[in-house]
Image (cartoon, rainbow, N blue to C red; front, side, top):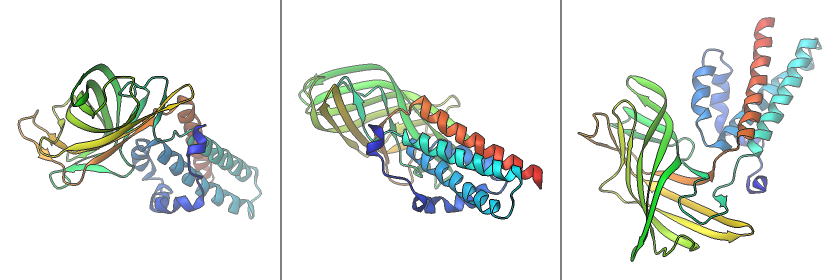
Length: 292
């Protein structure tokens, strides 16, 4: 069912990744560049691995025409297997939106994902946070009034942070507040304007992220009945500020808002398939190095 929502991935989709494929073929740069890609939206990881393994498989096939040693043939087989596993993993990539047995918000089986390549940067790029995923919704409290539904919950935003003294995975956790305008009950379906009215996240080292107090972080949520449950689509354009001193001073985002779009949380099986593809690719690279 999920596969039908996905565009077909082909060699033409590798163009945007060409510069990375060239660098990844350098033994020095592969480990450093691969980590950020693992934090991209799930479908982008599938396309990236597809491109990576496709390029390597093509190289192996060319070598087979001039080198019929057993090790070369094994590399070709491994490359083809890696390609299959990577594409199979990406085929499990979920469509936008969440299928749920309940129309309740937030959709606890989903996650909000920022676009691949987007970075929230502060202080003219001195601090950047990209590949962001908002998930882990807990402690949900909801209420209704004349404006609509008001929700508060605890969530985490994870991503790849780059600062003057650090570069790597980072997690901010804290409270989120939002309003679903015009919604009168937890079971009501339809399309609703939404606003993230508060975001107050902390990391373990004193940094904080908040929703901008001066710019509106607006979005939309659509809840549609489907056989056996409901389909929920949702997005927010979130303006953020950063504090690196525990909240005493705040730095606004240098650019535009982060567009967070609701998707289902990736299945463990798809991550395993793609990991196997990466492992097979690593084996073929080791074999090639040993022969040099």
